[in-house]
Length: 287
View 1 (tube, rainbow, N blue to C red):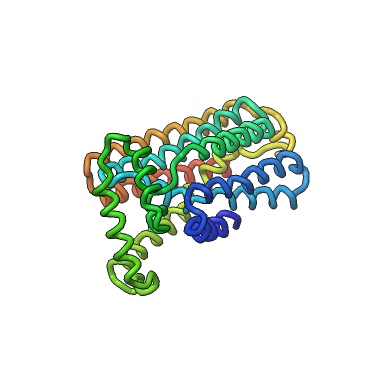
View 2: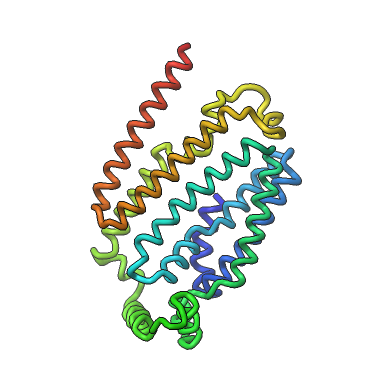
C-alpha cells in the first residue's frame, strides 16, 4: 500500500522539487518506518504502519526516472540493467545478515544503510533533463560535466535534451497515450509486470527462509534470536543464484541478444522451478 501511493506521489513531487530532492525527501518516511518497527515491533498495528512507511519511502519510480535521465544513451541498456543485480545483492545481503544476527540487529544495520544513502545523495548531481525543463541550462551543463567528465563535450547532449523537451511540450501528455507508439509499449510493459508479480517469484523470495525451515515453533521467539543456519544457508544459495542469473542477463543484453527470447527462456525456467517447488511441498505434506 505504501509503495503504491509513494510511487505515484514521488512522480508528481519529483517534477516540482527535482529528482535529487525527492530522493532525499522520501528517505524520511523510510527512516521513520525502520525506527517505528524497531521500537514498536510488539504492536501489530504499529508494525503494519511501519511497513507502510517503509513502502512509501521506497520510491522506485523516482529512482528509475533519475537513473534513466543521468545515463548516456550508449550505456543506458547495460547500466540500467544493473538495477536487477543491485536488487538481488540486497536480497541476498538480508539472508546473510539474518543467518548471523537477530532481526532487530539487522533492522539497525539497514537503518544505518539508509542514513549512509541519505548522506551520499547530498553529493550526487541533479538530473540534467529536469534542470532543462526548468530553464536552468547552465546548471544542466554543470551536472553533465560531473556525470560525463569535464573533458566531455556535452553540447550535443544538451541540444538533444532540448529538442526532446520541445517536442513533448508541443503536445498533450494524455493525447500521446492515444497514439499506438505509446499505448502499445505501455500495455506490453504493464502485462509483463502483472504476470511477473503474480508468478509467485516474490513470495518465494520473501518466505525463502520459512519455506526451507518449515515454520515450526513460535515465530516471534525465532525472530528475536539468530535462527538455525541451515534454512538461511539455503536461502543464501537462492539469493546467490538470483545474482548469477541477473549477471548473465546483463551480459546477454550487452551482447545484443533478443530481449523477447531472453524473457521466454527466463519464464520457462521460472515455471519449471515453481513446479518443482510445488512437487517437493506436496510430497512433504503427504509425508
